[in-house]
Image (cartoon, rainbow, N blue to C red; front, top):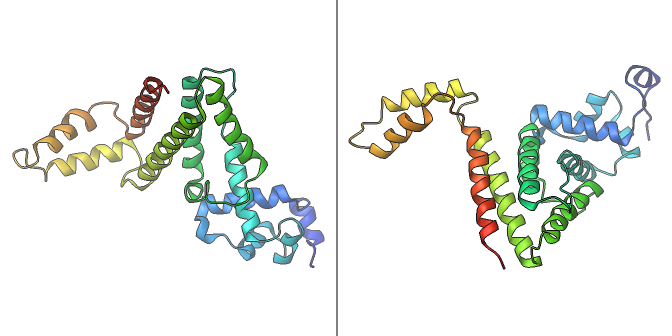
Length: 222
């Protein structure tokens, strides 16, 4: 198998598995997961494609490692924390990670070979809930509904036709011009009295919904 050139070693440093994974993440962040290939990754690293196989078995192994990298960016809840505070912090961190790595949305729970960071993450979330008195079944319900909300919110957030509060305000103003109040009274009301209010940002809806879910889980004792 071909080895990295001396020129590459001098310019970019020694090729390692960590570098391969980090550059794969950066490539997917910039161009989407569909752009990831062994050839493109090798080009980005300045090496021959065959050099990558000294560090990763194949593209599937890179995807597994990328998912593990993503999970590693989410802070772990502790068993001695209050579960609501811990799950809230974890959910916000997970949303932040997914917004940074949109490609991860479709991959986080799809891999058959989870890495150590992935396993630590799941074990810590389960352990925190169990230590706070959740039964095994209730823990599973809580984990499922929280992740469904986090992933779903980010998926919607990333596909909205605006990027900033100013973009949203401009879009809402345009929509209002085509929303006769007598035909769409409730939609027009929400746009005027909520979306167009000073300081409104769609992303703020995340913690509102999250707190509703956490309060519901708090009331739903076994």
